[in-house]
Length: 527
Image (cartoon, rainbow, N blue to C red):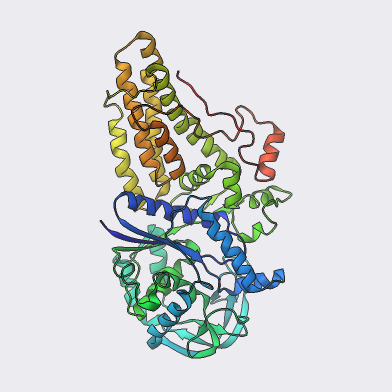
């Protein structure tokens, strides 16, 4: 048994959460559930970054107090746990959790040998909360950079260049996928400059954690935010060792836009403080709409907001809670896990989500379970035969190993493909064996075929548990015991069969529809 610490990044709360962060939450939830099923001791933590200048400006734009804005929006992030079926163990808020400020202050003092003051002038993006070396626009936000001139505290990052390069090059800090590892090694090899780790109280608008011993300065938001990985473990009280240095793996999951902070700045800060670095940095790319990165600002129109054209329409549909209310948690989680590649951005549309749900969950997996349970009731009064065949043993036997191998490689698409391959092969087995024909002919083979199919559906429930915990429980509920429960469709369709009328297509694209609109019962075939 291993001890595994799993973390998401903590997002700014300048607006409500969007589907891009839901991707990260679901990915870490899958890893946490998978390792728990392996018998590992797991801690899954997430939270919100409340102390950002971006949050301050959002509050000013709304004309409300910063505290009111961060409390309201942080609550929306915390609310994702229910709709997305998340299993996190801890949720930390950097402006409100009593563990955070004293932990950040202690961490600052632990790094004091590498902290110094100097005057600085540079170009800053508030959206990234990051300085840039040139006067071009921000590459993340395609927005002008702001010139900042002030005296700040700096961290001596340059001291750790060789050590960081060695840790990542040797794999002691594992960065996946390889494209991101190579990117960060090239960045380090080009040389590291010391970076600013504070801002003036005036520029911070008085919001944030003051620098210990220097109340005119506020600790830089990234220093503050990265510290959450320790402060949530009660670093201030020195109780973090069980889940930091005491963990066999310390796994950070994050988007590619914040890779340098997690693979360069954060490990250097940890080394400075005398702490061990993370063991794994797993990096996902972006969800996009019309090729543009999804942004929380697209949700500013409120839950029912929709734009006039395709871009505005799809941007309005990236509210994860709205999507779950419309299509169900299984559809949302399945799309995020089946559609998003290991490397490369992927465009979200409601049509793609529906196609994945209806094609694979309703017509594939749901249809299989419904057929099997229906046939056991029709031909054997709901009693599961004890006989089995070996026809599906190979695909079932390979699936668990393939899932584990894929998740170790941070490849959720390959992991879910391994699970779905079992359902596909089981459906082919139904079509080959034709249980309805065996029943009509009175063949003694019918019991073995039905027993094999029920065992396979039970195996699918187990395999699905990390990915679709709600669906897994429903499948297990229909397939457990000597006598099966009555069949109930597992995944109602979200799109009518045949060519969809133009008015239906227009409504699907104009806003997130009400739950289960235009659904039909899951198909029941083969008896």
